[in-house]
Image (cartoon, rainbow, N blue to C red):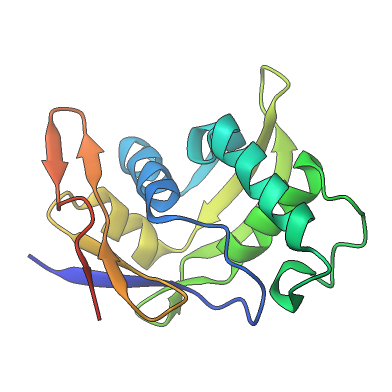
Length: 164
């Protein structure tokens, strides 16, 4: 089984993307026939987690530089800015040092909810389609966490499998 490393190369900002969010996105991509997709933000960032991250950022915005997000001037940060941060971090995500996405654009879904129009790179798309590939997320602290991917009745990897 091939293992591929996913990493966010976003500089010094606090990374809001979690392994669970990446797992949800990979499963979405796995189910689709084309490299371009529209995904609702809530499909990868549940509302309770969204509120929690928003609160953490706003509470710490002026106490730690990693929460400042120099490209976001609004204070306090709202859902809209949080979605911009998420988009920006996904844009710089790499799989084995190769870009995962050609483009990510904020858009509204058919139901009017916030979403992303995503164009995957071919290597990332085909890796997501291969249910035998194992993904590991390289956390900001350098540790790796194996992603749990649930493709219907199949489930791969194990929860909390962290290693250096």
